[in-house]
Length: 279
Image (tube, rainbow, N blue to C red; front, side, top):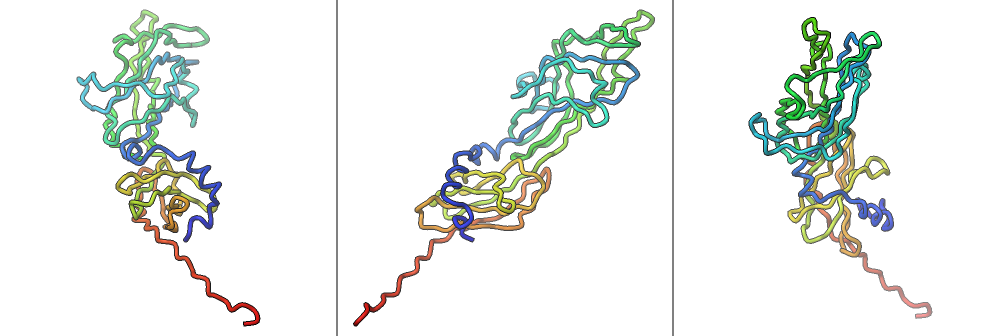
């Protein structure tokens, strides 16, 4: 299939302007989105003051060198009891190198409170909030895939009454569960010397695009679980026709190999000379 027959030059240019990051960087990173949910508790409200969310690619609890904040952290005070029955609070996301998400840390502020029968009382974090709440995740992550990390806060187990003092301590019990949300498509384009753009297409809609690296490899990332046509479109004026592979199925959490897309030289049909009238 000649991709230029289905994508007009103007459309090609517009899509090229919006090309994703280079294949090298895509192949080395995964996107992690973090959300907070809660199991119901017998209180009016449980307000948790989250000041920052950090991640670490190391699963070694003694490793303090690799912590980094989310690229788009959403700090704030969250009522955990509203995060039930499918509701969740988006805490932010981060790009991490392919490999492992080791740990997550929540840094808490001082505005943690509990409401019982309409009366508000302070929630104390015995260990303090400076070091934060560490959660071991130890999940393998694949470049080109978007993951959702669910932090499931168990209020009933986390809020502890401090004897007969009338005070309450917050000893968080949180379950961290990693969910993959998207998949990716990899492959190669040949010949190497011909510049090209690669597209993931459903019907007449272009869903994603990228450019091959210097070895011809490409990665189309963050794709929903659908079946795609993958097309390589050569640069205008290259003298080559594009190549397409149909029926490429994306599976959530996996990278599907589309194989090699080999572009071919354009065949130019020579005009047959005609005799001039009267000869």
